[in-house]
Image (tube, rainbow, N blue to C red; front, side, top):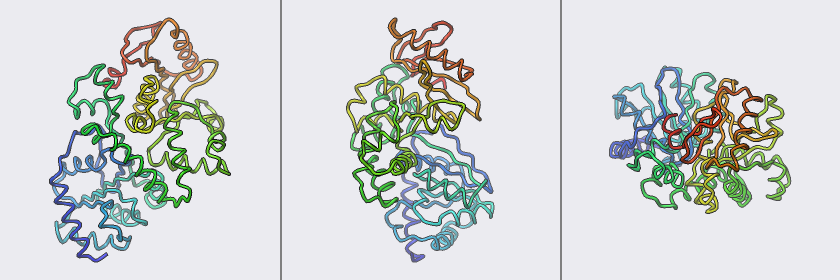
Length: 397
């Protein structure tokens, strides 16, 4: 690109940036460290750019560039030097560099390494965990910090929707999910477009897939089976593809784009974790609901997905437990098992023994330190096990 072209884009982006609202303060804490790059990764439209703007308000002088701007279509790795010169010509010297969706440019990590070596403070956003980690692993080993941003939490939702904590607002959050634009405008098309962009831009175009119907079918199948076990062999038969490796690759594309997460069955043996069936969860209840109406009618699965997302955000690993009995989630941090969590819409005389026995077996086998039951709106102690409404649990934790 010509230097003059880059200059025009930088100025226009800066104008737009300064005219936009910085929105609700996010709960994710960002530390700006010299000699390190900070990576904010997460699904499209979850608020990464807004978080970047919030961090910018804390510094005096900074450089900013958004690579998802269609005017940057011809930007190549050699243009980074011109961009740096434009920054300095327009705004003088600064130690702060902010880049949106930088993974769009092949070879971007070379420029970032140069900035890091010069002890600049660099913050990047990106929508693809695989591309970011692969490139960072080769060029920025030990010189980067990764932070994952999710759609709005229940506490953040309350601020944006201007609602009070309680069952009514929690039910609204369950149905709408946490995408900021969907919370504000309540248009289902917003989350449907997110799904479309992930499939066609982040996966089909980026990986050069010829049969786009297969990845679309896989995504829709998984989003209609949230909280259920799956195996790669069964998915291969369902999709009618020639190789299990194809299914494994497609699953990794969906996970790396943050559309879905998988939870392995708990075992102290890593090999058993790999070969056992996994469970699938979705990044957002509102997005899953836009694909299948059956999800919104199943209060239990919505609750389970909400609890999983909260645990996934705040723990190194999340498993499900299956022995003679079952327990929905086991959390682990630094290879130490910490919690066993059961999810139940409502505890009744019919299900109470099943829920408690599953928790007790999970605690005995995993050595979990804490156990609890998350319900929709039921709070009581049963055999020294605390049952707590999800909306209270989400606010407390």
